[in-house]
Length: 246
Image 1 (cartoon, one colour):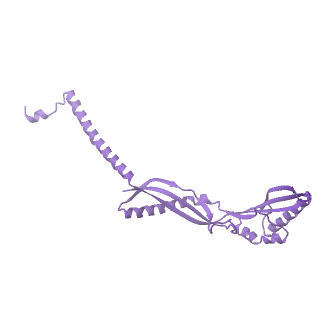
Image 2 (cartoon, one colour):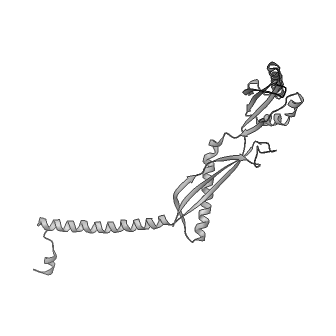
Image 3 (cartoon, one colour):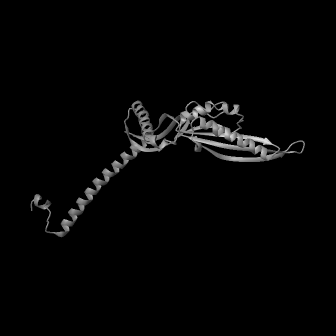
């Protein structure tokens, strides 16, 4: 028998066919396993090559809700007299806001408190404190009211501690998607600069964390001592993104 004939497989022999097929499967498995192992090692090395950066987005907005809490009190040894003074002040306050064009239901009671103590002569003194709250989305009209608040003093209304105007922005959900996208682009810019400096390329996002949104006064610590709140706000969000590097 020639060498060629000796190397030929007898396909009529079931055992020979089984051995040959098993050998083929084993060979393919070894090749596939080697590829997967190499690809896994490559992915592991790529996972180790990443950069974590932060992206910032800021936007100036105008408040769309004004809330003015007006606190005032009256004191007397006669509880009925103190309450009568409170009623007079309440009428003066409502007239003030009515003259500025506010609807009557824009001003609502938000609390009342009655306290008493005895003076040095043993006489009981009553203090009645009441709070009214103005809530409006007419920011310009609210600012005009605050600018004229000393007219209340001229009408005999003495504002107590705890009075003040605050402004809020309630439209955050409408601008969230755009601001997150802007912060992501800002993070990508930082990653691109890092990649350029390290002679690499930026790949996809490995992980990302969206920070919380903050809404602060645009002009600093509003509401602090001697500083009135303003309707001009600064919305800010910071995202933390981990990019692959190739």
